[in-house]
Each structure stands twice: as C-alpha cells, then as structure tokens.
Image (tube, rainbow, N blue to C red; front, side, top):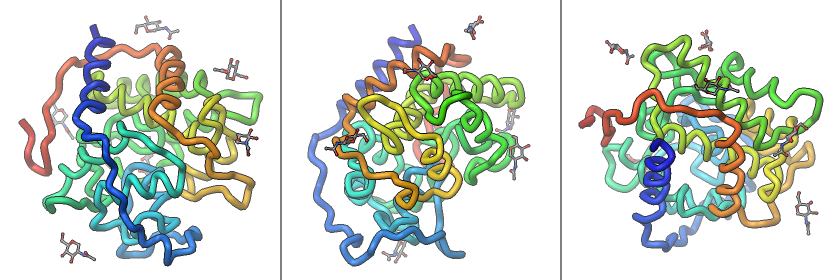
Length: 265
Ligand SMILES: *[C@@H]1O[C@H](CO)[C@@H](O)[C@H](O)[C@H]1NC(C)=O
Ligand SMILES: *[C@@H]1O[C@H](CO)[C@@H](O)[C@H](O)[C@H]1NC(C)=O
Ligand SMILES: *[C@@H]1O[C@H](CO)[C@@H](O)[C@H](O)[C@H]1NC(C)=O
Ligand SMILES: *[C@@H]1O[C@H](CO)[C@@H](O)[C@H](O)[C@H]1NC(C)=O
Ligand SMILES: *[C@@H]1O[C@H](CO)[C@@H](O)[C@H](O)[C@H]1NC(C)=O
Ligand SMILES: *[C@@H]1O[C@H](CO)[C@@H](O)[C@H](O)[C@H]1NC(C)=O
C-alpha cells in the first residue's frame, strides 16, 4: 500500500507539468562560474545541489529571488540535469515564498514542504538546525561502502535506512511518510548521478564529500559535468536500487499539508 501511494505521488509530480521549460537567459554568461563562498548577506538552502549552483554563479550568488525557470536552467548548465520531476519539485518550492514567482534559498528550510527529516547532511527540524551542513549527521554517508573509494545505489539505500533509524530513535517528531521517502530517494540518486555516472549510479567518494561539505564542484580534483543528460529515466533506475536497499517502512501515512509559511491545512 505504501508503494502504491508512492507511485501516486510520483505520478502527481510528473503529471502536473505542461512539459515546457521556459528558456531563461541566465546571468551565468557574465559569470565565470568559479566557486565563491556565500557572503554575509547571501542565503543558502538545506539542499547542497542548489547551494553548489549558487556558489558557482549558475543561480544568483545572493540566493534570492530565484524563479523555477532559473533553477531549471542552472540544473542543466551546472549538472546536465533535464528532469520534469525536479522542475515540479522546484514549483513546490515557490510555496515557501510570499512572492508570486520567486523564492529565496533559505526559505526552503520550511519544514515538510520539500525539507524533510532524516536528511543526509542536515539535522531534523524538531532537533534544532535543519538548514546548515552537520558533520555528525553526514557521518552515516561518509562511512558507507567501506573498503572501496566510491558510493553506489546499494550503499545509498543503506545510508537512507541508517539515517531514518537515527531520526526515529532520537526525534519523536520524525515525519516519515511516502512523500518524505520519495524526496529522500531522489536526493540520493541525484548525488550519485551528479557527482558520478548517471548510467551506473557510481560516484567517487572524494567528489561526493566535497559536494556536501563545501558545496563546490570538484573540478580541480577531476570531476566533469556529466556527458549524458541526467533524465528522470536515469534517476528512476538508480532510485529503484536505492529503494530496494533501504528497507523502508512508513511510520505515518498522512501528514499536514504545507501550503506556505504559516499555512498548514
Ligand atoms: C527581490 O525580491 C524582493 C521582495 O520579494 C524585492 O524587494 C527586491 O527588489 C528583489 N530584488 C531583485 C534584485 O529583484
Ligand atoms: C513535537 O511533538 C510534540 C507532540 O506532538 C509537540 O508538542 C511539539 O510542538 C513538536 N515539536 C516540534 C518542534 O515540532
Ligand atoms: C549536529 O548533529 C548532532 C546530532 O543530531 C547534534 O548533536 C549537534 O548538535 C549538531 N551540531 C550542530 C552544530 O548543530
Ligand atoms: C556497491 O558496492 C558494493 C561494494 O563494492 C557492492 O557490494 C555492491 O554490489 C555495489 N552495488 C551496486 C548496485 O553495484
Ligand atoms: C562520459 O562519461 C563517462 C562517465 O564518466 C565516461 O566513462 C565516458 O568515457 C565519457 N564519454 C565521453 C565520450 O567522454
Ligand atoms: C527491515 O525492516 C523490517 C521492518 O521494520 C525489520 O523487521 C527488519 O529487521 C529489517 N531488515 C533489515 C535487514 O534491516
């Protein structure tokens, strides 16, 4: 039954789309896309991928006033991602904002909109800081797939299992429905595909660690933007192996529907 609900959610994520990603003339043409740490007035999100795109100027370095077409263009330019499902997720992100068509990255910490418990690198909302990278939280991923120098979909599934077990043991407020599972799975296939090979789901540990810790593209260390498009089909194939290895069960079926800041039904 949980898997049925999960596929409903995935169908929903895909179905709302009109299928057209507007071309956005990105400011990155006048930006050389070098990594620059965020300044004191720049804002960042709970998501290392979006933060990396902002740190490299594929998104506004301020992290502010970001539209869905800007995110779609940045994902393509920075990572070679062409994903309807992720564009749909970005549309959800707009609900974090009071503005009509743009969002600020830090607003994405709004609990249970896109942000979720049992993150790979952030603490749970109810335990304090759900926005910033936390090395203790990250240790589950860091120490996974011992003995080899890469992470893969099997290890990613095990890490998802471990992170959820830690949340359930330490946070009585853990939210764990099919929606969280869908987002968590897709985030895991993304770090494998973006930092590694989207056709095999194998990613060098060194690249993944730089991506999470520094929110930087490890170009100096030999990383290259994927030479094949990272599509929903490719991510879905990795998702399936991750799900099979995560031994996931829901602890709630339904949760509050978050429609915006202070607007939960
Ligand atoms: C960003 O949005 C805020 C309010 O949403 C607005 O006041 C500001 O002028 C915008 N900045 C830019 C650069 O568009
Ligand atoms: C955690 O759950 C308890 C009991 O439902 C509730 O009183 C409390 O406000 C929750 N805390 C957070 C941070 O959501
Ligand atoms: C990081 O997470 C651990 C485990 O939840 C927590 O004990 C610690 O306070 C967090 N560190 C920071 C700086 O928030
Ligand atoms: C992931 O790597 C481990 C360790 O080498 C291996 O046992 C496992 O079969 C790999 N998983 C996949 C999907 O290749
Ligand atoms: C494309 O990338 C893969 C994975 O990194 C690599 O094995 C392959 O040689 C690359 N192909 C070309 C044509 O560069
Ligand atoms: C998988 O989850 C079930 C139910 O939570 C549990 O009984 C079982 O021990 C778990 N298996 C593994 C290998 O973790």
